[in-house]
Image 1 (cartoon, rainbow, N blue to C red):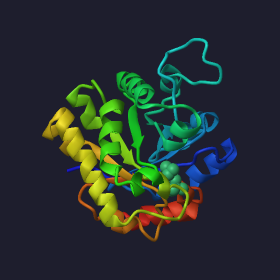
Image 2: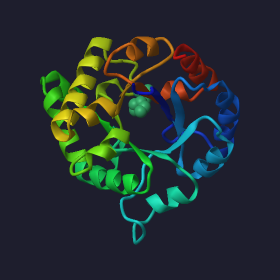
Image 3: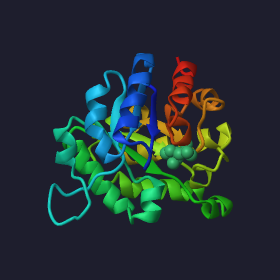
Image 4: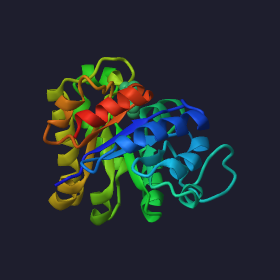
Length: 247
Ligand code: G2H
Protein backbone atom coordinates (compact mmCIF):
# COMPACT_ATOMS: atom_id res chain seq x y z
CA UNK A 1 0.00 0.00 0.00
CA UNK A 2 1.63 3.23 -1.16
CA UNK A 3 1.09 6.38 0.92
CA UNK A 4 -0.01 9.26 -1.34
CA UNK A 5 2.40 12.19 -1.67
CA UNK A 6 1.31 15.67 -2.68
CA UNK A 7 4.00 18.32 -2.97
CA UNK A 8 3.76 21.97 -3.91
CA UNK A 9 6.57 23.19 -6.15
CA UNK A 10 6.81 26.90 -5.46
CA UNK A 11 9.55 27.43 -8.05
CA UNK A 12 11.04 30.98 -7.73
CA UNK A 13 8.17 32.29 -5.62
CA UNK A 14 7.78 33.33 -1.97
CA UNK A 15 10.17 35.22 0.27
CA UNK A 16 11.19 33.61 3.57
CA UNK A 17 8.42 35.50 5.41
CA UNK A 18 5.81 34.41 2.88
CA UNK A 19 6.96 30.80 3.09
CA UNK A 20 6.68 30.81 6.90
CA UNK A 21 3.21 32.41 6.79
CA UNK A 22 2.04 29.69 4.40
CA UNK A 23 3.47 26.92 6.56
CA UNK A 24 1.84 28.33 9.70
CA UNK A 25 -1.53 28.33 7.92
CA UNK A 26 -1.32 24.96 6.18
CA UNK A 27 0.76 22.75 8.49
CA UNK A 28 -2.11 22.19 11.00
CA UNK A 29 -4.47 21.06 8.22
CA UNK A 30 -2.25 18.14 7.14
CA UNK A 31 -3.33 14.65 8.12
CA UNK A 32 -1.74 11.21 8.20
CA UNK A 33 -3.58 9.87 5.16
CA UNK A 34 -0.92 11.32 2.86
CA UNK A 35 2.48 12.97 2.81
CA UNK A 36 2.08 16.70 2.10
CA UNK A 37 4.92 19.08 1.42
CA UNK A 38 6.27 22.13 -0.36
CA UNK A 39 9.39 22.81 -2.38
CA UNK A 40 10.84 26.21 -1.48
CA UNK A 41 13.72 28.40 -2.65
CA UNK A 42 17.06 27.53 -1.07
CA UNK A 43 16.81 30.70 1.04
CA UNK A 44 13.48 29.71 2.62
CA UNK A 45 14.43 26.09 3.36
CA UNK A 46 15.92 26.54 6.81
CA UNK A 47 13.05 28.56 8.29
CA UNK A 48 10.52 26.33 6.55
CA UNK A 49 12.05 23.20 8.09
CA UNK A 50 11.92 24.87 11.52
CA UNK A 51 8.22 25.76 11.24
CA UNK A 52 6.92 22.59 9.58
CA UNK A 53 5.76 19.84 11.90
CA UNK A 54 3.63 17.93 9.38
CA UNK A 55 4.58 19.30 5.98
CA UNK A 56 7.72 17.91 4.42
CA UNK A 57 10.04 20.55 3.02
CA UNK A 58 11.77 19.91 -0.29
CA UNK A 59 14.64 21.65 -2.04
CA UNK A 60 13.98 22.31 -5.73
CA UNK A 61 17.43 21.30 -6.93
CA UNK A 62 20.92 20.36 -5.71
CA UNK A 63 24.41 19.82 -7.08
CA UNK A 64 25.85 16.31 -7.21
CA UNK A 65 29.29 17.37 -5.98
CA UNK A 66 29.82 17.88 -2.26
CA UNK A 67 31.79 21.11 -2.65
CA UNK A 68 33.99 22.96 -5.12
CA UNK A 69 34.07 25.66 -7.75
CA UNK A 70 30.39 25.64 -8.71
CA UNK A 71 29.31 29.26 -8.31
CA UNK A 72 25.72 29.66 -7.20
CA UNK A 73 25.11 25.97 -6.50
CA UNK A 74 24.00 24.18 -3.30
CA UNK A 75 25.31 20.74 -2.32
CA UNK A 76 23.58 17.79 -0.73
CA UNK A 77 25.60 18.08 2.55
CA UNK A 78 24.35 21.69 2.81
CA UNK A 79 20.76 20.45 2.54
CA UNK A 80 21.47 17.66 5.01
CA UNK A 81 22.85 20.13 7.54
CA UNK A 82 19.55 22.02 7.74
CA UNK A 83 17.38 18.89 7.90
CA UNK A 84 15.95 18.83 4.37
CA UNK A 85 14.52 15.37 3.63
CA UNK A 86 13.23 15.68 0.03
CA UNK A 87 14.66 17.23 -3.13
CA UNK A 88 13.04 17.78 -6.53
CA UNK A 89 15.48 17.01 -9.35
CA UNK A 90 15.30 17.20 -13.14
CA UNK A 91 12.25 19.46 -13.29
CA UNK A 92 11.60 20.34 -16.93
CA UNK A 93 12.35 24.00 -16.22
CA UNK A 94 15.80 22.97 -15.03
CA UNK A 95 16.26 20.65 -18.00
CA UNK A 96 15.16 23.35 -20.47
CA UNK A 97 16.75 26.46 -18.94
CA UNK A 98 19.66 25.29 -16.79
CA UNK A 99 21.15 22.36 -18.68
CA UNK A 100 20.05 19.46 -16.46
CA UNK A 101 20.32 16.13 -18.28
CA UNK A 102 19.41 12.53 -17.48
CA UNK A 103 23.09 12.03 -16.61
CA UNK A 104 23.28 14.93 -14.13
CA UNK A 105 19.89 13.99 -12.67
CA UNK A 106 21.20 10.46 -12.14
CA UNK A 107 24.28 11.78 -10.29
CA UNK A 108 22.04 13.98 -8.13
CA UNK A 109 19.70 11.06 -7.35
CA UNK A 110 22.64 8.89 -6.25
CA UNK A 111 24.08 11.60 -4.01
CA UNK A 112 20.68 12.33 -2.44
CA UNK A 113 20.01 8.65 -1.76
CA UNK A 114 23.43 8.39 -0.07
CA UNK A 115 22.38 11.23 2.22
CA UNK A 116 19.00 9.66 2.94
CA UNK A 117 17.19 12.52 1.18
CA UNK A 118 14.28 11.38 -1.01
CA UNK A 119 14.67 12.46 -4.64
CA UNK A 120 11.54 13.53 -6.50
CA UNK A 121 12.71 12.75 -10.02
CA UNK A 122 10.85 14.70 -12.72
CA UNK A 123 10.37 13.47 -16.27
CA UNK A 124 7.98 14.29 -19.10
CA UNK A 125 7.70 14.88 -22.82
CA UNK A 126 7.50 18.13 -24.78
CA UNK A 127 4.46 19.12 -26.81
CA UNK A 128 6.30 18.27 -30.06
CA UNK A 129 7.17 14.80 -28.72
CA UNK A 130 3.56 14.30 -27.60
CA UNK A 131 2.25 15.34 -31.04
CA UNK A 132 4.75 12.99 -32.73
CA UNK A 133 3.53 10.05 -30.62
CA UNK A 134 6.89 9.76 -28.85
CA UNK A 135 5.65 10.02 -25.27
CA UNK A 136 6.31 6.42 -24.26
CA UNK A 137 9.79 6.36 -25.81
CA UNK A 138 10.70 9.61 -24.07
CA UNK A 139 9.41 8.43 -20.67
CA UNK A 140 11.32 5.13 -20.90
CA UNK A 141 14.51 6.80 -22.07
CA UNK A 142 14.44 9.53 -19.39
CA UNK A 143 13.91 6.90 -16.69
CA UNK A 144 16.66 4.63 -18.05
CA UNK A 145 19.12 7.52 -17.78
CA UNK A 146 17.89 9.30 -14.66
CA UNK A 147 17.49 6.13 -12.60
CA UNK A 148 20.48 4.17 -13.92
CA UNK A 149 22.52 1.99 -11.56
CA UNK A 150 20.57 2.48 -8.33
CA UNK A 151 20.04 -0.38 -5.91
CA UNK A 152 16.50 -1.86 -6.15
CA UNK A 153 15.96 -1.24 -2.45
CA UNK A 154 16.79 2.45 -2.89
CA UNK A 155 14.40 2.75 -5.82
CA UNK A 156 11.54 1.66 -3.54
CA UNK A 157 11.92 4.90 -1.57
CA UNK A 158 12.11 7.41 -4.40
CA UNK A 159 9.32 9.48 -5.94
CA UNK A 160 8.92 9.97 -9.70
CA UNK A 161 6.93 12.94 -10.99
CA UNK A 162 5.55 12.53 -14.50
CA UNK A 163 4.92 16.03 -15.85
CA UNK A 164 4.05 16.46 -19.54
CA UNK A 165 5.74 19.74 -20.40
CA UNK A 166 2.79 20.95 -22.47
CA UNK A 167 0.63 20.80 -19.33
CA UNK A 168 2.94 22.80 -17.05
CA UNK A 169 1.51 26.12 -15.96
CA UNK A 170 -0.64 26.20 -19.10
CA UNK A 171 -3.98 25.22 -17.60
CA UNK A 172 -3.98 22.40 -20.22
CA UNK A 173 -3.89 19.41 -17.88
CA UNK A 174 -3.62 15.85 -19.23
CA UNK A 175 -6.81 13.81 -19.17
CA UNK A 176 -6.95 11.35 -16.31
CA UNK A 177 -6.76 8.53 -18.87
CA UNK A 178 -3.57 9.94 -20.42
CA UNK A 179 -2.03 10.65 -17.01
CA UNK A 180 -2.81 7.11 -15.80
CA UNK A 181 -1.45 5.58 -19.01
CA UNK A 182 1.83 7.47 -18.68
CA UNK A 183 2.21 6.79 -14.95
CA UNK A 184 1.63 3.10 -15.73
CA UNK A 185 4.45 3.28 -18.31
CA UNK A 186 6.64 4.79 -15.57
CA UNK A 187 5.87 1.88 -13.25
CA UNK A 188 6.40 -0.65 -16.03
CA UNK A 189 9.79 0.86 -16.90
CA UNK A 190 10.85 0.72 -13.25
CA UNK A 191 9.78 -2.94 -13.15
CA UNK A 192 11.92 -3.62 -16.24
CA UNK A 193 14.90 -1.92 -14.59
CA UNK A 194 14.53 -3.00 -10.94
CA UNK A 195 11.84 -5.68 -10.65
CA UNK A 196 8.25 -5.84 -9.47
CA UNK A 197 8.86 -5.19 -5.79
CA UNK A 198 10.59 -1.87 -6.51
CA UNK A 199 7.96 -0.91 -9.11
CA UNK A 200 5.11 -1.67 -6.71
CA UNK A 201 6.69 0.44 -3.97
CA UNK A 202 7.79 3.55 -5.85
CA UNK A 203 5.44 6.51 -5.56
CA UNK A 204 4.49 8.20 -8.84
CA UNK A 205 3.10 11.72 -9.04
CA UNK A 206 1.32 13.42 -11.90
CA UNK A 207 2.16 17.10 -12.41
CA UNK A 208 0.90 19.74 -14.79
CA UNK A 209 -1.90 22.19 -13.94
CA UNK A 210 -3.18 20.13 -10.99
CA UNK A 211 -5.70 22.13 -8.94
CA UNK A 212 -8.51 21.60 -6.42
CA UNK A 213 -10.95 20.98 -9.28
CA UNK A 214 -9.05 18.01 -10.76
CA UNK A 215 -6.99 16.49 -7.92
CA UNK A 216 -9.61 13.89 -6.99
CA UNK A 217 -9.83 12.40 -10.48
CA UNK A 218 -6.05 12.04 -10.75
CA UNK A 219 -5.78 10.49 -7.27
CA UNK A 220 -8.39 7.88 -8.24
CA UNK A 221 -6.07 6.47 -10.94
CA UNK A 222 -4.38 3.22 -9.89
CA UNK A 223 -0.82 4.22 -10.83
CA UNK A 224 -1.02 7.83 -9.62
CA UNK A 225 0.07 8.17 -5.99
CA UNK A 226 0.13 11.93 -5.75
CA UNK A 227 0.80 15.21 -7.46
CA UNK A 228 3.50 17.82 -7.94
CA UNK A 229 1.65 21.11 -7.98
CA UNK A 230 2.93 24.52 -9.08
CA UNK A 231 0.46 27.39 -9.44
CA UNK A 232 -2.26 25.90 -7.23
CA UNK A 233 0.20 25.39 -4.37
CA UNK A 234 1.02 29.06 -3.99
CA UNK A 235 -2.08 30.11 -2.09
CA UNK A 236 -2.72 28.57 1.33
CA UNK A 237 -6.47 28.38 0.59
CA UNK A 238 -6.02 26.44 -2.61
CA UNK A 239 -3.46 24.01 -1.14
CA UNK A 240 -5.71 23.50 1.89
CA UNK A 241 -8.58 22.67 -0.44
CA UNK A 242 -6.37 20.07 -2.12
CA UNK A 243 -5.47 18.60 1.29
CA UNK A 244 -9.12 18.46 2.30
CA UNK A 245 -10.10 16.79 -0.97
CA UNK A 246 -7.52 14.05 -0.51
CA UNK A 247 -8.58 12.95 2.97
C1 G2H B 1 4.67 21.62 -13.18
C2 G2H B 1 3.87 21.99 -11.99
C3 G2H B 1 4.71 21.86 -10.77
P1 G2H B 1 1.86 23.68 -12.51
O1 G2H B 1 5.84 22.42 -13.25
O2 G2H B 1 5.82 21.02 -10.86
O3 G2H B 1 3.42 23.32 -12.14
O4 G2H B 1 1.02 22.92 -11.53
O5 G2H B 1 1.76 25.17 -12.34
O6 G2H B 1 1.63 23.22 -13.91
